[in-house]
Image (cartoon, rainbow, N blue to C red; front, side, top):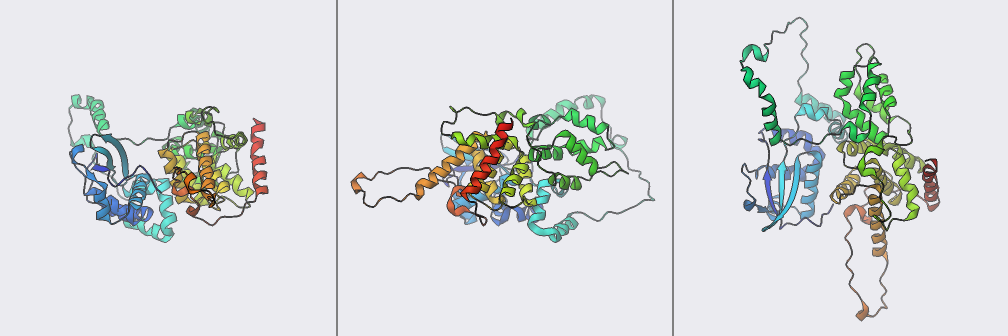
Length: 452
């Protein structure tokens, strides 16, 4: 992963909105380090030593300081930084002033072990990285065995039984809460309105079911991810919740629910995605280079949920979508970075254009990071980005004629391809996909345009 805008001569300042605790490094090294690697872990620990309570833009340091202390190259440092950003340990801001470019690094405290293991994406990624045996060992390390005491009666005192607070002070709780919220940064959450899932309809279905509605709404993020990634509607989601519920307790086993979601057959059209504004089609004037023959593929990208789109492509190649590939799609869906149609363009690029056998997680994240920085918002923009890279690759492969006179040689400046677009960046063995198979796939995808 390479970012041309990143330079060792750029200044940087490190700050944090909250006190970083002494116990944080133990959580990072045991739970985060297996996911981000040694380079990112070293960068995080080094940045902690640069945290300043009072931030002054004039007291900036150069990135050469980090490169020298860590003994790594600029590209390695940038990749390490991106992993910290993706895992939630770092937020990055950039600005220009009279002294030049300065990067503001806001360090984030790691999640507590309980919150880490309750996070679906972090828990799944840790399990896939370290294996089941080490995963259970980490659970045993952070959580003590449950001590049952059925004969004991709880006599714990409540807060107001011990502490006295004046009524007038309690009336000011709204103002106090607003003061705290102004100093803390809230992470953007996926909302029902953004995904297009009808919350009122879901609640109505749950009220007529035996399932505990309150428990389901506490895990609403799982429903939203299942809708965005797998294209499941309200009726299907409630049906799967009932299948995963314990009739005796009315509680849903959400681990079983996730397995049932992944086992669902393709649902077809994305009936709810039209509510997302970034998915609106752009005109030919906005993207003049887009080929007319790509319109059928764009229609298919809008018609399929990402998981179903991947399954169709893998089926055409005589394969199937793996659990790790589906987890990758769930990760990007929960991050709320792109509309599903944009994700489908990336899936098509990896599976068809690059003929990859698997939806490689590292490659996928590299492209996602690059497109996010380029502010790709629509499937048309994503496809144009893919086509431009394919065109540049062909130009770079064209040999220069040796018979051409030296005096007529022109120096042409070409756009530098990112790592994920280069031929040497293939991260997985590629399967053969003939031109006849490619045409067959395009013909099948174009059928969705006719159905509309």
